[in-house]
Length: 246
Image (spheres, helix red, strand yellow):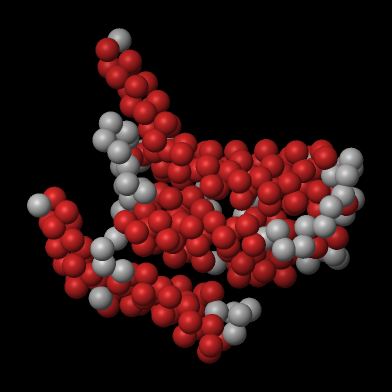
């Protein structure tokens, strides 16, 4: 009985630790989820479609594109290629999280399924407090973010028939949220080597490949740079932690 109560306590503490990290995601996901649900409704689909698609696909940009796919002639190969291109960045997220998902048991399968951009940002950078379990913390971050998106899309699908509004520019909510996450991580770190690598790789690939095609080359360049400079980066990080502990 004591072990059961202790496990429940750890799970509860993990949930309480995870929830505050997801509050900014809640705001962004609900705005975009509502817009997506309304968009599906005005495109002629029942609220059931955005509800199920947000639950199963759970890929914001891909779900918006899927509306066009559903209204277009049947082309499964084209749909597959577009889906791979839009979501290919998740390959790099998965590689980055291989070590963190070790020993997670059954939770690992849901963590892999539910790893969107925002969830990856939190689970990769968050400082998990003492008393919380890393596996349950990441599980609740993933579950809460999933719930925010599904509920927003469902409510938007239901409300779409009641009112209409112009959603032009609303996608900037997610951009703003990523800027906040970046700045928060910047303040936590004394050295900003990885941030400079990310910024530099993005600018270089943006100039070379253009705004429509720079994402995948940027990911590849960042992975290559972090692999090449892995040892010096780890040494600097260890030195930084040593100074903080001292």
